[in-house]
Amino acid sequence: MINSNYVTQVTPGMRVLSDDQRTRVHQATLELLRRTGVQVLVPEVRELLAKAGCWLDGDRVRIPPHLIEWAIRIAPHRVVLCDRDGNAAMSLEGHKGYYGTGSDTPFVLDAYTGERRPAVLADVANVSRLVDALPNIDFLMCMGIASDVTESISDLYHFREMVSNTVKPLIYTAWSRQNLEDIVEMAEAVAGGAEALRRNPFCALYSEPISPLTHAKESCEKLLYIASKGLPVVYTPAPMIGGSAPVTVAGALVQANAEQLSGLLICQLIREGAPVIGAGGILYMDMAKGLISYAAPEFMLAMVAFSEMCHYYGLPIFSFAGCSDAKIFDQQAAAEGALWMLVTALSGGNLIHDVGYVEAGLTASYEMLVSMDEIAGLVKRFMQGVEITEETLALDVIDQVGPGGHFVGEDHTFQHFRQNWFPQLLDRVTREEWENSGRLTLGDRVAARVREILEHYEPTPLDEATVAELEAIVQRAEERAQ
Image 1 (tube, rainbow, N blue to C red):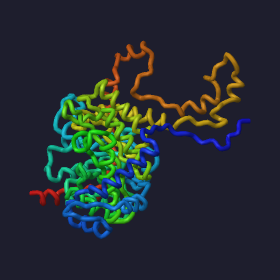
Image 2 (tube, one colour):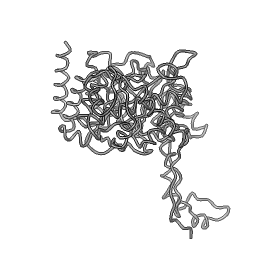
Image 3 (tube, one colour):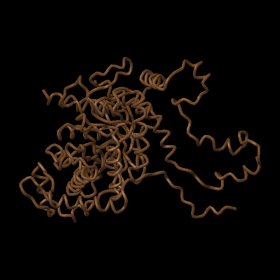
Image 4 (cartoon, rainbow, N blue to C red):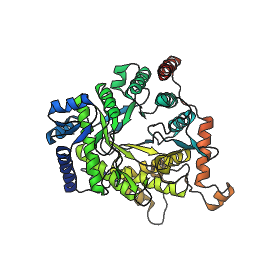
């Protein structure tokens, strides 16, 4: 008998920083916040920081190291997001990974013509239905800025379409504090009240500091509101290597870490235990082209390193995957998107967004999203690792079959083969079958799947009373915007 005691299954993983390097980055971050500090453009937030013991020089705030250490200790190390019905859907902690779309692209690739055009509100609804239908996409961001509604309150229209077309968790953006208050009111209407939303949040705000080292007016105002409500926020820096951050990955990492940790401190001073999801993107600017690259190895390295710092602190991680610099869904898009999916999973990202982005985040692609859903299934299976038990080692079955036999008809095979992953879009048929079925490429199969969902899938609707309440909030905002 094989002793199965003391067996621990290993999850695949990767690291780019040693323990000593993570400690050095942390110490450098504390020194940056002590020596250089951050700019905070809202007096109320500066007062909170000063009262806690920070040093003020106009709108510059320098932060003693012990305050950052305090914020790391008291911030939740686990953030749970629910579905629209209040059921726990994503536990953001450790190396648990969940995939979702990106947000706020100005353009979309039309699912029928392939044309690159401005996004409209119907695209937000369509992407929401796609996400609801796709089995391996776990959450939704709106994936488009609607160009056919009132610009100043388009975020309210986005939220209405998102929550109406999927039950999955949402990450939303808000253009202003007033709009944020309206969106939270909409979310409370869906959840059944403010306390119900706080206890079982199905959505989280996405907001950013401004690199380098600035907590802008709108960002601070939104943090004051959302943290005081006890609702989740993704507060993630987005410095550009060589642009708004040092050209070295290490320097950009220290700056981004300072931006996220000072934001974490602000949230904890507003309300201790405020749920914050950190890390995010350290973007790479191609110095030869002057453009952001979404598939540069430096971007991936920086993202992995930033994730490792959040693991070091035990904080939930906002991360990237399934995105590309390609202009359409083509071979480049598939290759870059798939590499991102695996790298991010191996590095232990939790809330993994931007699935479906092409053109470095300027354009949303229905086909990219659907193809990466397939890759997400593959990667999720890979991340399960290898189960080693007496049952899976199968010594009795091997002994029974013996040399020269086969395992196709064995009960053990029948009992376990469904645990393996089977593709829906990737090709595993013989060449003869492929030719007889029309010699379809992956792009052909993906396009057909997109159209099938858009034409036939119907999400679970909201009840009529909630729909009416959401519409009333949007119309009130319309009147205010006039």
